[in-house]
Length: 249
Image (cartoon, rainbow, N blue to C red; front, side, top):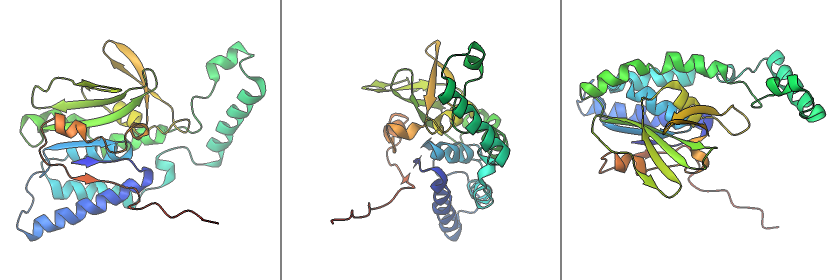
């Protein structure tokens, strides 16, 4: 299964998964484990994918839990949305534009992004219990989890993955994979909208690269699921089915 990017529209992905859970229950599946052994995601979809993978031993219950988070979702859970935080961020950028890099002290305090997404880190700690992932993979509830991000350092689209199988990292034109222990840093990197949220530094191939939103280069990176062994892939998007027609006048 692949969960694409889409920002707050990623909430709609949980509606699709709730419908799937209801259909499974109607067919007598009950609380059987996750029916998607390989789960991949990018951008906001990476957060949903990781949260789902961390509850792979009880698909229906996990889908319900994640859906409740989205139903109670507020902007302040992602970034500092209060007046003081917005004013502080605005003041830093105004100082940057006004003074440039003139002050050595300012170089240390220059803003890294328009908004501070520290609240999202706290939300992920509750929503995505990644410490469960290795054991779920070991017990066979999950075959692989993969999240993608865009490297500002190399310009490549990078897939980070954990897998029960000895899948070697793959390299293609402008994209590659890295076997790694998935952390909240990977999720923050995959969902870091350029300029809006800070880039995240992740060590890959022995050196640190800085990553941002995974959907910048590929909104639906289906290749990761195929490399990890998927023969059929369910892609749950969060974009428009059709672009609106432009004004011809």
